[in-house]
Image (tube, rainbow, N blue to C red):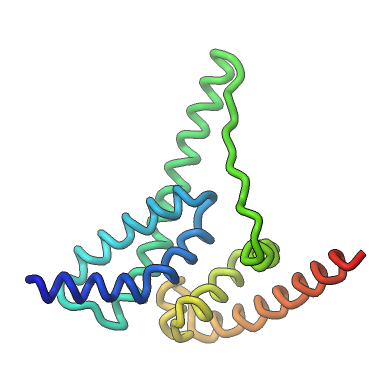
Length: 170
C-alpha cells in the first residue's frame, strides 16, 4: 500500500502544476481552481484505483473540465438565488480578487483574449502535453478538430501577443 501511495504522490508532483494551470483556465478564481482540481483528482482516483499511467493524465483533464462545468452551473444557480434575494432585501456586496502582477500574468492576459475553445486546446497541448487524440477525447471532439483549434488558437495568441507588444511600446 505504501508503494502505491508513493506512486500517486510522484504522479501528482509531476502533473500537478499542469493540471492546476488547466483548472485555473476553467474557473474564475484561484480558490475555485483549487477546489475543482481537488474534486477532479478524487474522481480520477476513484475511477482508476491502480498505479497511475498516461491514461490517468487524460482522465484527470477530463474530470477537471467536468468539475469546472459543475461548479459553473452551481455558481449560476447561486447567483440567480442571490439576485432574487437582492430584489427582495436590497443591494448585494460584491467581492473580487485582483491578479498578481508578474510576467506570467502577461501571457495569461494574452491567452485570455483567445476564444475559450482554442485556449483549452492550447493549454492541454502545451502544458498538459496531451496528444490531439487525447485532447479530442477530453473535449469530446475529433482529433482533427482539436488540431485545427490548436492552429487557430496559436495564431490568435500570436496576434494577441503582438498587440500587447505594440501597445506597451507607446
